[in-house]
Image 1: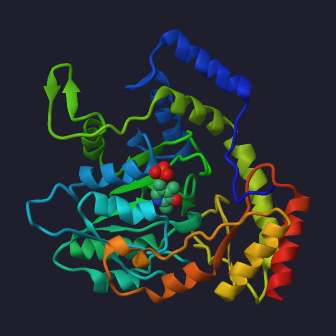
Image 2: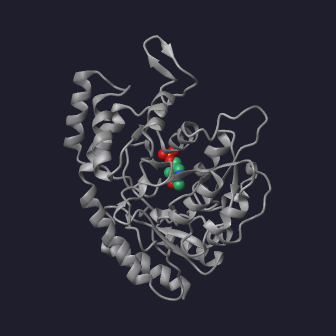
Image 3: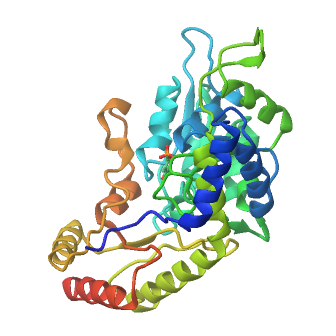
Length: 366
Ligand SMILES: *Cc1c(COP(=O)(O)O)cnc(C)c1O
């Protein structure tokens, strides 16, 4: 069976050594030494400052909104954030959960990222933030988005759950905006079983967020303000330290798979994502846009017959999810969501697997 993705499991011996250390120290959570070590190593590896590890990528978004003052509103005051309908549900549901109404603006039909030209017209007097997604690791048009934000005094929180390690004009993409969040879920490029992180532009926001993720507790006998529990634990950090050690080798393997798909599927019948020319690729996903929803269903069925399980990422377009209310449907997002599939990409996928997948995709689309 070939799944769409397979969580990466690092060297067992190395993980065992970290776990032995945890057993010796008997320090399992609350700012433990492995969480501190992973924080430093990730800041170093990614080329960022003010990184805060948290328990998952959804809480990373929620804590970022809170730390930047997007939420925690006065009674009765409506708050809105403009976001993309072409993403994983957590991008928009985390806003709703925090009492902020997601307002969906359409994506660019080629890059599949939030279109800055659609953001401006969606701004109202209630808009507090823009939450773009570097979807499939493709860097958004950050300059144009930040220009809109600056003009209207909005915060920018990038959901970079797919963009681990991506560079933009020679610097980390994760340094953009007021905050950028990451997910370290088991299926992501870099993972800590479950986990996430926030990279803040300002140290003051980092310090505030540290308090928010630990119940607002600031000392043995002091509680300063409302908080929640969003801490990463030592077992998560141990997994992260092991996966990080093997990151470069993994990226090389994934790059080869991605390039094999790209060269095989180059041509008129499929559309590949138009990548930002100023950004690097982290080969996190292998999405292909087919010519119709019928083709998607036929391709998935044909692949299943040979034991290959693809997924429709991201489907449905989030502006069609009931609990967000009935707003206008975004044309490009709905169109792309209907026609997209993600092909398998993970360490361990063989050349034979790739050839098999490509031949089925080509046969159905022809
Ligand atoms: C995975 C993902 C999240 C949520 O991260 P979790 O760690 O699973 O909570 C948020 N946004 C996007 C775009 C994602 O792909």
